[in-house]
Length: 226
Length: 226
Ligand SMILES: [Zn+2]
Ligand SMILES: [Zn+2]
Ligand SMILES: [Zn+2]
Ligand SMILES: [Zn+2]
Image (tube, each protein chain N blue to C red):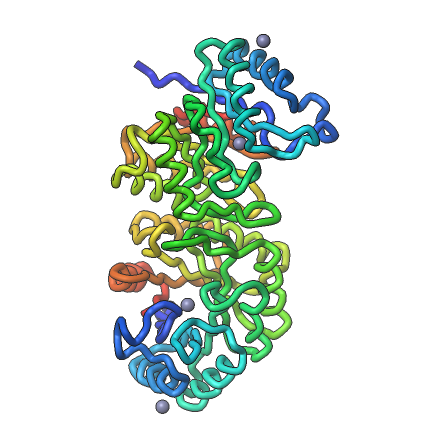
């Protein structure tokens, strides 16, 4: 039995706006229809961000709730993954939507630089988000922006802060963080297999590296994000 | 011609106090004599932090100046390396001592988690510290707490923010950052050789991993910190 490739679609993200690309879905109804089209095309996970009226990122649980309901209604069986990323809010506001009990939520377990600032995931906030995910039965997708984040996720699983087989996304191509690099991707995979043989992994490339990460991830037996 | 192993001594650091170990040198004269003893024993680089009267970490340039003068007087030819690390100050205060023109200074080029907080090295502060080091002719020791920091240093050298052959220290064993791991150390070395063949590297283990990192670093042809 082979391991089927899971396609995750990140329809909106937290950065691009209509001025960059008029097709970026911003309103909840645009997001639901965009996700529906991706679902018809084969995407199995919807990675979700929500936006304010002015297109800035939001972590509003009410907006997340309407998006989750819309996707569940239009895309039966699709896995809804809500972002707890730091571009959308600060501190525990980043996890306020976890009580909606989505199937999955993203979880960064370490800190790193972003293009213009520090992506701050302090240890106590990481632990709080992980415990909220356990409370509400939400499966985390670990966002590994660097090698040590894989070690941290494995340690958190070993001591019970994370449950079950890990699902780790390797993120490459963010300026001032890890670039898109094939040898690093191979080492990430080998390290995850060494430390957590039952884990699954997904490759995500940001910006121009996205297609390359898609190709490599599929060829190397992982899942991938588009 | 072999590559001689350079021993760097970190006599004080920013964390341990007299209550933890009465032998930790805190005053400038204690630091100078401790460095002198290490110099006699073969240490070639002194990695320096300074402390306030109450033993808390400081970035006071006047204190750094007296320490540098003392080491230069007692240890002729020893390389003085001042810490610009984030435990001792915030923002540009971390680099106020660079105008003293020490031989070297530590430079973190990325951010990561520390035991209880985020070790914040925002991109604009990193660039400012690097440019101050060029202004004052200070050779940076890159502190690589994670794999992406190696890539970042190489990128900074390629675009001129860092000069000359890189000197990179791999730091392992800090809680919530990279643990002491031999396969990662080997991959660090291979990655640095691939990206910057003329670079030199040093291995530093924090806490109980120190001796192991010393052994591995010497065996693998690098430099090391004690
Ligand atoms: Zn996202
Ligand atoms: Zn629909
Ligand atoms: Zn130090
Ligand atoms: Zn002396």
